[in-house]
Image (cartoon, rainbow, N blue to C red):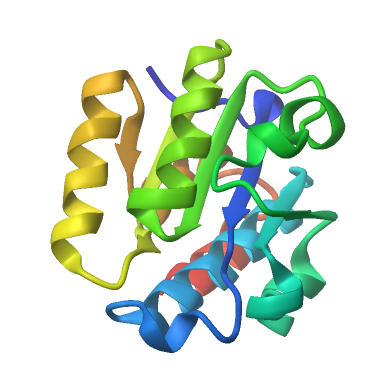
Length: 176
């Protein structure tokens, strides 16, 4: 099964500036989320973000914030409890998800999206936790639940589908 850009939304979970230094390889996770959001924006896909208790953890990184169409402030680890599907995901069938922490907020949100009938694609190289064991356990659990584990390059090329896509060269520059 391939992703379909016409049915996709990008959901970036809690890439908050204060949190990123605690995330294993946080600079890479942040950079990959910025690339992913830039590609989604170029291709005209909705880019949605969440912020976990922003009054305490602060806002998302400014580069993420500027690339998002909407941001949901939340207190629950599962963003769906705070109204994500109804308020923030337009009539999409697929959710491409990334962010932090893989084993808490990203996992709980992705699991609920799966339970609600969404096709979920977890961008592994744009997702992190403080400990790699927690991140890896989340990936295993999500795959067992039916989520598709992908990389940023897989997402970009499946969204475009063709080297003749009008934005192919521009997206390729972001990947390389």
